[in-house]
Length: 345
Image (cartoon, rainbow, N blue to C red; front, side, top):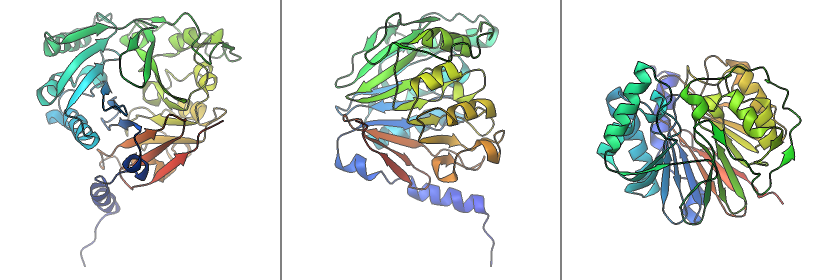
């Protein structure tokens, strides 16, 4: 009898299950968020109950258009043929590199970013030039802290952009932060990471936070001495779960019920950051796009919450579906496992 490896079986099962969908999304109108696997970059597709969309970052360039293909597949599953807004957090290759390939596959209504590139190295200058060329004469919005994206039925407010942050507390924010001394001696980050455009999405009582690759110094500036955000339901771990980000000052302040880590097998999921997130005060579950090789057994979540448990079994995604009462579910496309999170009173 021919032997089939465990990895082959896992990948085959994943392929068969990837066309399924969580029951909640089939029966109710929901806010849907697709966490696309772009191998340690970011590509997060947000689709509102009204059918409007915003893509946060576009993954990498190259790989024969792999990341643009995966984004287009997520859009097809979501039933949309265009992306209303593409929000670029910053100009690093794993976030903006996929724009030229994406615009060849899908129509985009407008691009949102923090303004001109501020990291003047040859690679980043080249990425920014390719991005500017790709968007051409498309509508272009330079976002500033406090600005909103005009999507119906949801509120998306910029919290950080180009090294600045919101000056006033949001509804539910303004609490004193007890962890401001943690990482206080972190050096200034001169890269584009520190200029990441981050936002809070609110849908009724549901709150989702994405700060791009914001690094610790800027996280502390945002969250201290008072936390302007308040608590959130879901936190996309900053900077793919790398140790340069995810300070306790921000993680414990926003105290998510669920964290989702958009890491790759060999990028992100740093044990110190993973532990900080794992130990945050209200956390119920930590989901991961990949098993982290660096994290080993001690610093990875349970297998059923990982979209891609094997390094070469890639392309599976996580999908979140939220209701306006604050309840939500997360679904793993690889194994059809889903978990419901009831609304909190």
